[in-house]
Length: 227
Length: 180
Image (cartoon, rainbow over all chains, first blue to last red; front, side, top):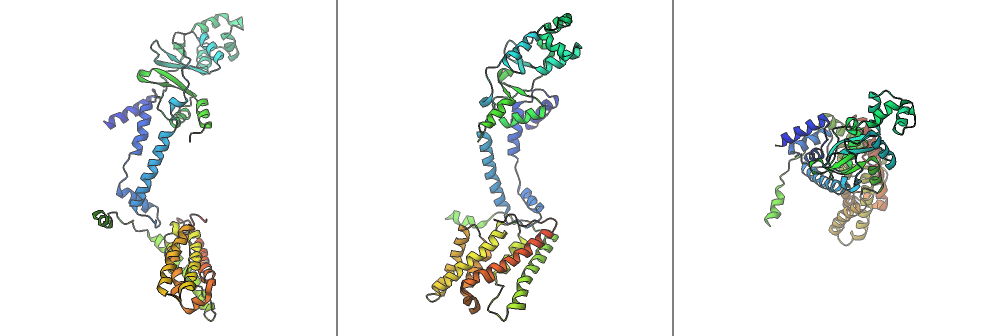
């Protein structure tokens, strides 16, 4: 059973499909429960290569006490639910790119989750998607593109109307990396670094959106003191 | 009651034996450390009222040359333990030698342990240093509180210098873990 769960995890991570929450949490707790046998302690003492003024039994006792404290510290630390923004500004896959650009600007944000009718997360669209993916398909300069969203440069009228009419579903990033509301702040910040992302949707059952955590939220939470 | 006797069974295993190089460095360190204080004592101090060697240094050598990562073997414990215990020992001798030697002996060791625990300088040979202040020779007795500095403090200091040199000459050793 355990093997099955683990291989599923690996598969998910390998495919970069929603690096699941549950997978990561399980990995951590499994690591904590690795049983260290008598001979492991003996080996460890041997590897110290000098006379250690401690018995393997005492070492074990100290280790388990330290482990207990570490678990308590991790459990009492903040999780996604504590720092996420909710409700979330979202768009639909059939929203137009122009609408998204306006939405981002108006709310001073740089990305929004894309959800379907049932509020299930199907993708995420960011400034990067708007600038890069649109550009690849329609060779416009950066300036032209910015202008295009607001109909400033009318020289490329045709292209512009074409781009603005495009749907979010065509340029959004999918599948999305998501976390659950019990994912710890440490795991989320590790995820940001590892995947080089700036925000991650928080989902509940059936991938339904319940919040979003950004890098700024992490910074804010740390500033408030994790204690 | 059953539990009381059960506790005496132990049950754990003894730690592993150390390697050959560890044994070598423990030997060379303790040889040189004791050599230093013994050489000074027998070479220069024999005709004086002073001495630089006391029995408890043999025990200190075990710790600072053979169990060098132990908290009990760190400089704070080595120097502090000897000096503090020596003061306690001399005080006990002076206070109780005319009343009862057995009380003076018991008090010296037990109070030295208390004093070392309070000052975070627990060093097992300190107990011996305190006891020697009581049961030692007339030469020791006549030193009075000087006993805490010479031989206890100075002797321990010389052995510490040797420990710093020999323990750090070994590639895989590092001493001390901490100073204070």
